[in-house]
Length: 50
Image 1 (cartoon, rainbow, N blue to C red):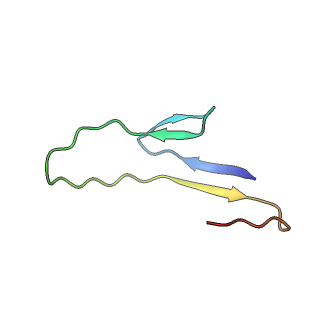
Image 2 (image 1 turned 120 degrees about the vertical axis):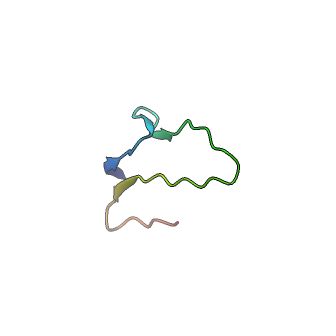
């Protein structure tokens, strides 16, 4: 499998481990949305369960 086209947004991305990390401070009752994206490629003969 191969992960491509990674859009990390405002996160700190560790490309060696493949981890996105957000460090933030939220006040009570505050909602915040962060976006990220990626594409996953794998051979047709492989089965991927989610």
